[in-house]
Length: 416
Image (cartoon, rainbow, N blue to C red; front, side, top):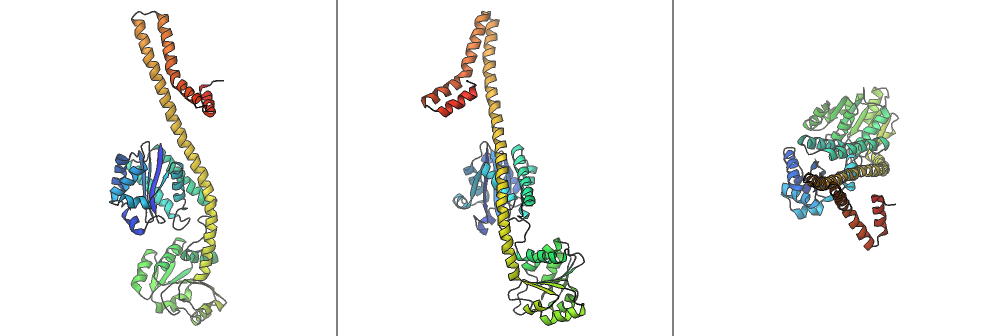
């Protein structure tokens, strides 16, 4: 039995090629059905995300060349182009790769959690189509268990590795929780949208998005039950804000020291947490001089991100040890299944010889032949047929003067 993993990802192929090899939800059922009939795969799972397309295949006739040909033909891509950018893992390495993917060790952002959900979805889709049976049921469930252990036993996902998430994490450390806290987000670009997503997931319910163009701010606000305001209304909204995070394309500061000084006088010096993610800066650096203002810049967060990336790298090394051990255990289980099949085949073959010779002996007895001669012939022929293969193996090992092979054969045959 062979396990194969064929794929491309963000490290091996361009966005353009990844787009061409992606499986749409509409074509995925067709792909799973044809992969079984055209490649010799008995079981198959297809994982297709923006950063990777991977095919996991299991079967006695599974062949990597057939798999490459099938994937290239299915998407109309030249086989040579696919082969240049694809990677292929076999058996224990294929299992290990799946575990690394599910654990976030092969992701663009080390340790990101979304990939585990995507792997689970790919498994469930294949299971629904009928291309997941005994072997992949065990392999994927084992991978989900490993991913959970990696997140539980290591710090792979503990620390923030984007400035947006780092800003939210830092704010949460200051306030403990966002319930009852007002968050003012200035800007409406990708960074602020990501901040809004993270802070909403952390429990913030009072969010205001300020932007020069209200339509863009409304697009973000709709996703997170937030309110909107124009930049000219910031002085009103900031009066009651606990957290202010800004990221605009302005060439001049939007929030000055004078504004914050005036705000503090009106709110009786209740502390304010500010994060400036913009370059050039949106918040005047002098704001940090105010006693009740806690101002962080993008450079401060980059240092946190760099430190956290180092921590994740160390956690990844711990995760690799976990994965190595679990992949070996699965490989042993797979080998044991092969052994069971081999034992069944050997037993079936031996019983077939017995049935053949016993049938002949019964026919001879029914024909009136001497019973003692019939039994002697049966015993001799059965013995000769059963020892033929072991005898040939012993002779071959002796001719090669292979002491190791002879020792193994003696042990298997029970020769003292």
